[in-house]
Image (cartoon, rainbow, N blue to C red; front, top):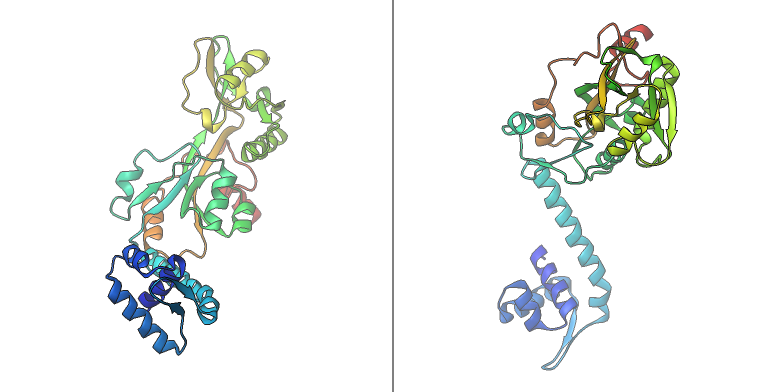
Length: 310
C-alpha cells in the first residue's frame, strides 16, 4: 500500500466517478482503475461496487474512508514539518508598529522572512507566536507573559517616550508633572494600559482615563489640547509629526522607556527561525540601563532590577 493509492481511493470515493477522479488526479483512467484494484488486493477488501453506470462505496470502503483521510492528513503534516525543519518555508514575523529599519539586510543571509500583514497589539501577537500562527513577533511583553506563553525574548529595540504639550515650552518636564492616557478598550490597549498604570503609580504621573481610542492619532492631540499638563505619548505615536500648535518635551526624573522584544517559542527547533533570532540580536541596550531610566518592574530587560533582586 502506498500513500498515492490512498489519495486515489479518497478521490474516487469523493467523486464516485472514475473519469472525474482521474481528471482531478491528472492521471489516465485505466491507470487509476488498476491502482484501486491493487489497493483492494493489498487490503483484502473490496472498496467500491462498480458497473458501467455507477460507482458506490462498499460498507468496508465507507468504513475505511475516514481512516484514509486521517492518514493522508498526517502525511501532509509530516511533510509540512519536515519542510519547516529544513528551512524551506519562510519565517513568519509579526509586529505591532515598529520594525528594525535594517530588518531585510540583517536577515537576508539567515532565512526568507515574511512580515505578516496583520498588525495587532502586543498581547495578540505574543499569543499568535505561542499558538504557532507566527514564528516570531516584535512586541512588548512582561516576564509573566513570557512564562505564561512559553516564549523566549531578546531585546531588539527601545523607545524613549516623550510628552506632548500645548504652547511653546520645549524644556524637560518631570514625569510627575505629566499625564498618561488609559483607554477603556482593554482588548486593543491591554499592554499599554498595564504599562501606563504602573508608570502613573511609580512616578506620580496623572492617569487620564478615556474611552475614545485616543491613545494615538488625532484623538491623542485633542486630549493634549484639553489637558492642563503635558501628556506622555505612546510608542504607536513615536514618529507621528506634531500639529503646529503642539510641542515635544523630554520627560525626566525618570526617563521613560518602552522596550521591544523579539519573541519565539521555547520549543522552537527550526534552524531558519533560530538563525533569524541570531541575526537580529542587538549589540546595545538603547539607553535602558542608564541611571535615570525607567522600565516596568516585570520588564524582562530591566537589568538593574534583576541585579537588585540578586
